[in-house]
Image 1 (cartoon, rainbow, N blue to C red):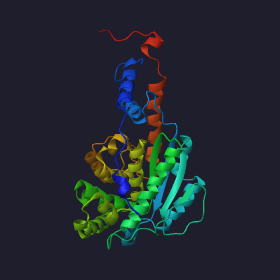
Image 2 (spheres, helix red, strand yellow):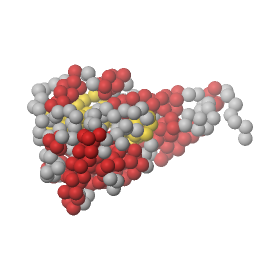
Image 3 (cartoon, helix red, strand yellow):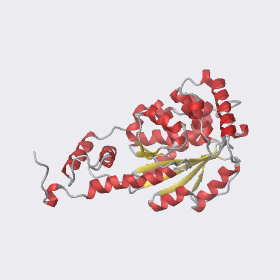
Image 4 (cartoon, rainbow, N blue to C red):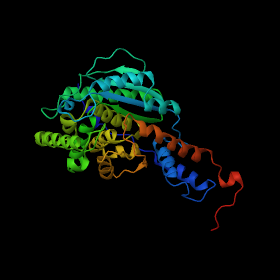
Length: 351
């Protein structure tokens, strides 16, 4: 299996639609710029969707689940079985992201790319299992190139399904015990910042646990440093199956021209890898919230990105994006449904 498809060009934004969106914003019954970033979001969506009145009513949430061999190093407060147990919870609709997807009438699915526990067939769960979790990247590369390719292709397939369903906004979520270790390692590789500056509690480590986690990640980065000569090799050596699937999904969505709402710490680590491959992928991305994980702001600064919300969230699953989706809906509804000065017979600002 090959990953050559990830290097194909991304779709271009529609400049005419952007100009039409800007023109409409200038005609609405409000002082120019008074809706702040809602105006910017609406105009960006115009350019992404190629229309003068965009919408995010047809949103889809896809949660990628996979386990991590690095969990064997004691870097998480929870056991690996929780990943599979949470997949079952997703299927039953009991997780935070499930509630938020229902609130927003968003399509929802889970893609299992590799839990350590064998899972039965379940509603809304697609079995794309590649291996029972990654290898322990403290000892060896997390994946072979073929396994990485399979994970990225699972993400591509999710993006293709979204396109077939005429989705107007895609939210990628993740579930994987110890995945903050992979995300921190990727953040350190991508930004050049120290692990000590980036590492956080994940699922709830104490200070001693965080210190141990940092030491494990630092040692692993030193071990693989000479081999991580490209984004693909970095992802292969220290990434996760679900993170690789997110990278594949993001790139494919950019190729298809579908707007992306990035969630938090883990998904931003996928976004930063995707941006190392295709810097222009950022044209297709909104960033939902500022994660409480310490390394998130460093990644956001590196990307030149600005979060829509700051609610001290660090759950993952796509939950922050599920909350931020309401903001994008507000951007669209004000842009689309407000009257123009002419329609409302309201006088415009004096020259």
